[in-house]
Length: 390
Ligand SMILES: Nc1ncnc2c1ncn2[C@@H]1O[C@H](COP(=O)(O)OP(=O)(O)OP(=O)(O)O)[C@@H](O)[C@H]1O
Ligand SMILES: [Mg+2]
Image (cartoon, rainbow, N blue to C red; front, side, top):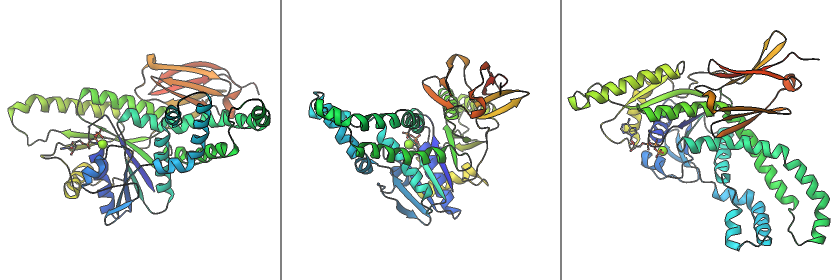
């Protein structure tokens, strides 16, 4: 079972590449489903077929689905929402405002993620191809399980105990609505669903992320930042797709400078992302809509390669021994020292890169050691811990 996610800057060709990849996987005899987390219905447009919230068969061995989680959101989260509405209502907010506030931002996306997990573990598909929204949203989406896990592990167990203890008292002295067990159960159910998602998506053997770029400076710069952030959260990129390269056949002198620029940018993509493989796709003479065109496009893109294969397996976060000292190595390709902040809080290491922050829980072997140095070497943050005293 393989999950392939395609992301990149807006408009670079994510949907096209995801759809083409799925078609090629199905043609090679794998049961494949292509899904979109992007509320804009472009996947259906590219496939030229109607897609909705349930998997629809598009051709032999190929299914498509638009991930829309509003219904399940109600089902699992309805009780929490009701409680929050009553709480906000009690606090004096107008009913409309309370209803709006009770929908936590990002929650619907979390459900889209757990849907990917459900599809992947259903046993019905060999490949799940995910057409993601542009990078910023994708990274936010992929960082959600981490944030939620952190929150649930630290805050929820405590809160639950407190509420159990205080509920009788609180109810007697104030009219403030108190969360019932159902609220906590709903939160726990969501948390459990998401535990599996994080495991699935951060397992490099099962899940690969592919970065789609165009031969343009700003697009490449964003792809590098994306690679850094994905790595921070432990996700694995296994290939870069360079899309919309001007074909050799274009001989018109008007395009001369464009062709030279594309060649330069392609060289810089290959150099900076090495050892990741760079798959190439040319600018097609027409918009890529429908199965036949996408299938040809996929053949050019992958050539003899198996699109579902793991194309590169990069280093993961790990602890290395150096004599009696230990070094925690966090791969962070392209990271800029000025964008990086590190802090320690008890058994956690807090790493902030640009706008994203991750709390890395330290393994037992490091918990009681002091940090002595931190460097960026070979595209990785290396944090040195002093000799153990035990
Ligand atoms: N190599 C190509 N040659 C010609 N047209 C292309 C190529 N790649 C993509 N397109 C066209 O460019 C348009 C945008 O592509 P697509 O929707 O795949 O981009 P996207 O990255 O998914 O965009 P968004 O960020 O809006 O989701 C589509 O009309 C698609 O057919
Ligand atoms: Mg798209």
